Image 1: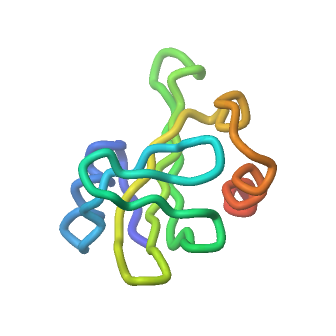
Image 2: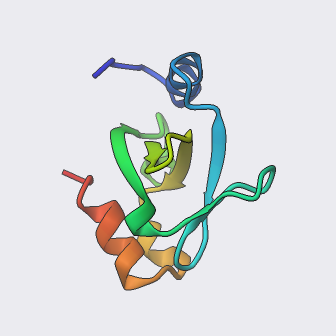
Length: 101
């Protein structure tokens, strides 16, 4: 796995490797607002995870997930460390927390 110093550097690196879809977290799936792609937890795998901490404020921390669907679509999901506070399903919490090691 490549090491990145910043979130923007990681996003650019992943984009250059084909992770071009911008996913957003929904209650029980991840969605792309630009395409009709909605993926339930069983329909995608998290390929890589990158954590970034804010330089001046620890609450400015983010996690970047590199995601690939069962059909080969590749994209990224950016979220704050507190993914559990976003009101997501237990299945989605389980899917994302597997990769928080």
